[in-house]
Length: 341
Image (cartoon, rainbow, N blue to C red; front, top):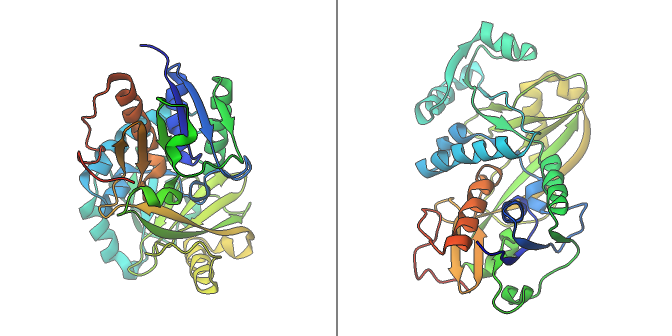
């Protein structure tokens, strides 16, 4: 296999994995990102980064779980920072029906009651008496994972160019004949007409007195949240799913709901320091499944929705295989003739 020269545009989690997969296969990779190195991939920075293929099946087509299991395996093989302690799903007594519904719609879990709840997360004992434990799931700290991938790219000899926006048309980012992989997320919405933005809001809290070792999802019929430990006393609490592409600041209403529900999970969050409030816009197609679209030497990879971290390794491997073999037989490829601009 001859060495390819490839440009990847966009350094969110999708673009970083694309570049990383190609670089570790020995190809000559240039990664271009419009923002500075301290803030690559806006939506990727505001992510739960839960590698949770079973939990995601609650609101996703079966393909997401199938490919997500492979994505989880690829993360574990590549990144030593993967935390493999499973996921915990809980609900208050009055919302027990939500727990029953979630159990019915997912696999890979076992029901737990008070004794095992206390063994898994002692500080939740006495607050939640039933839950679902997904032992095979994992999570990463998103910003540490992004930094790891950037570091690996540089170690592998890739050219990494931050603060380097690519003008339209994006295929001009590379020399004639060389492939360009467009991973701009919602910033590349002009390439695919049915891409929409889904706003997600989050808060980062510093709560050194709160001890949670795995992601905890609190089910609620109106405002479910998740709490993800990032290590060193930091926790990410998210996230709203608002069907609009507003990139503005978090509203007071959303902040109160996030913080109030975090307190419902663990009262220790009342004394937490608010480190950051932020919002990101996730790109999504109508079926909420990402896809790969081909247009000459341009390859558009987009629409990860809330599955970006979970499916980024699978998308990267699929594109790398295509570039090396020319074969585009995979369910993530857009149908032949699907228009992109």
